[in-house]
Image 1 (cartoon, rainbow, N blue to C red):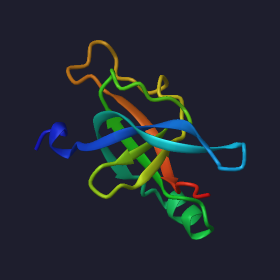
Image 2: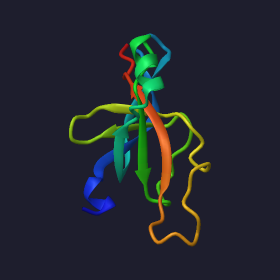
Image 3: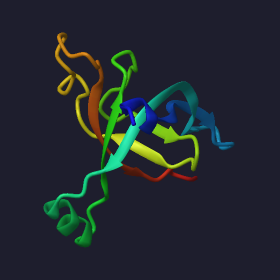
Length: 116
């Protein structure tokens, strides 16, 4: 199997302001750009201990260099509509120019869509 075989469909969510009916606004999100990425759970012993103490699960995500993700961005997996928040500066983990497979690696955590 190739790295491409593990990729799934995702959406970058765009933050929007929606009238709250009382003269103000609330933040909401809508699907923006589509992209593909591989995602897997970080399963270190330290992470399992942290999860037992209430820390949210951590994920590693691999995607192409052209996907415009940044710290704090929210992404949604298409197949089950789960949300993830990017937790690192994605410029930190990029393959070197000489690598045959060019991709970016970043970390993410489960994220719950706020409901008003």
